[in-house]
Image: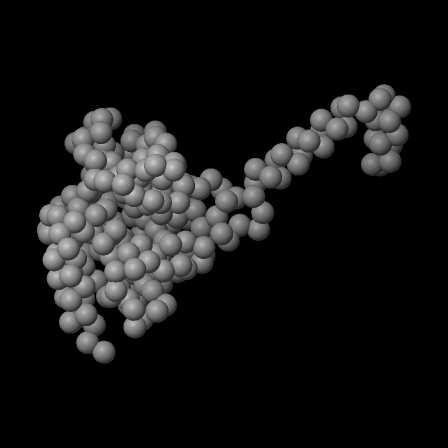
Length: 245
């Protein structure tokens, strides 16, 4: 199968639609180069403009990736952080623009981190760093970043991510809950709005698909048990305490 021709057809179609690639560079060149079939299971549909599900996450459609990269506006040698590595396709497109050694990606789901690492290596972007982290905390060890892209919705930009931006840097994220819009932030202010989007919310530890149990549920159970123990009469607490021993 001639994947290069399929990539060209995909990008040409997005350019023809207009809205997907309003500013053709740098996303169009990068998307012509990145082998998307290395990132999706349905190889024969890898170059159609559609989403896929993988390990509880959504593999973004190429048109959505183009919008994200266009809003981020990365330049060669920019240091980039991607929050929400997913399967790694958006990460690879950015690596094609700025260079793999300049891209860092994190995901809260350990299985997705493994998958993204393998996909990126297979696609020729093995120098990208992918780590398992809470997205709201970012990756301070490698800060500051010229560009930060968040592939998950939040009401406000996480403060830690704003702190990790370089002077003059740009952070792009889906703002809102039910009604979301893609926004760019520079110097603490919204400097660009790129239309409506629909992303899953930024997760906290315990909510990822690979988690055995939700940490918040465990905490709630513990708190309720403590409240129930305190509500018992004195002789009941004494009896329960002795029984525990």
